[in-house]
Amino acid sequence: MVSAFIMIKTAAGKSEELLAAVRDAEGITEAHIVAGQYDIIAEATGTEVYDIMQSVAGHVRNLNGVADTRTYICLE
Image (tube, rainbow, N blue to C red; front, side):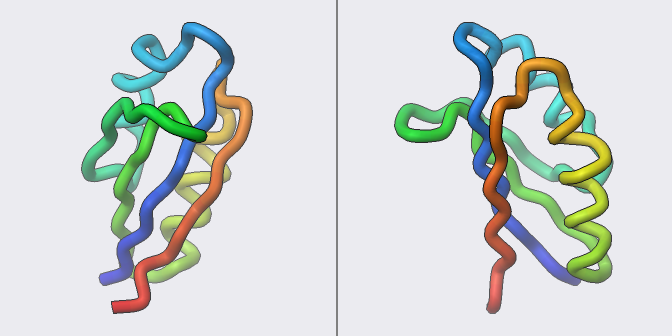
């Protein structure tokens, strides 16, 4: 099992609206609105790194209002 944290920057005022959609995206296990450089942090899991990258590219980045994402694969 592979885990990753995804930092999501949203368009102004879109964080609350996007939170439910991020939580519902395939592979996402948790998501929270945070203060700082990014607006939402999400945790994803998959069988392989490819599964997580597919989830981010296919489901999270394509949401209307997502401006940028950064994915950090856990090494432990």
